[in-house]
Image (cartoon, rainbow, N blue to C red; front, side, top):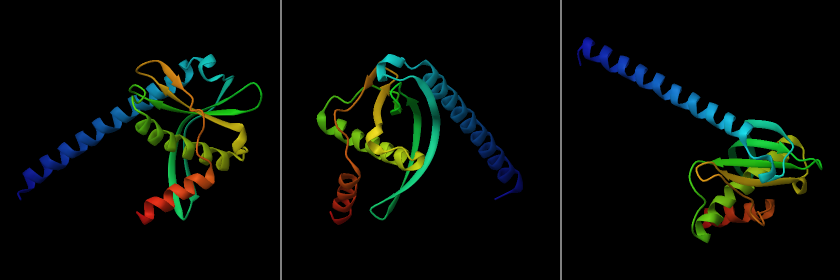
Amino acid sequence: MGRALLRRRLAGRRRGAARCRRRLDRGRRRRRGAARAVPRDAVGVDATRAVEVDIETPVAGYVLRCRVDAVFEQPDGRVTVVDWKTGRPPADAVASRAREVQLAVYRLAWSRWSGTPIDRVDAAFCYVGSGQTVTPERLLDEAEIEALLDEAATA
């Protein structure tokens, strides 16, 4: 491969990487703006506690990596972990349960990372595209998440 061709390819990759970084930065700004614009009464929150927190937590011998989009404090001292979704809520129960596993892991990760007892951590999806906030009736606890991982590993 000639040097000129190699230079052009590298320059193209640099431009592509710069475009990708700009898109990521725009996405981060939109999510932060969404965190500020969330309808507080939708999730019963009082104040923003955190935005875009990366957390790793061990569960059943695996290290689960999470990016918690936002955490809000409630007036009674509880917190609500919010996961932003750009689309609409799932139409079927199977897809809803699959998403709720992610939310349960985020809830567990926040509880461990922040030292907040898990029974004081609520969680919700905020579907930005449709303007809906969905709070699952029940999320998996730590033992159920471990069992799910064990089952997936042996399947």
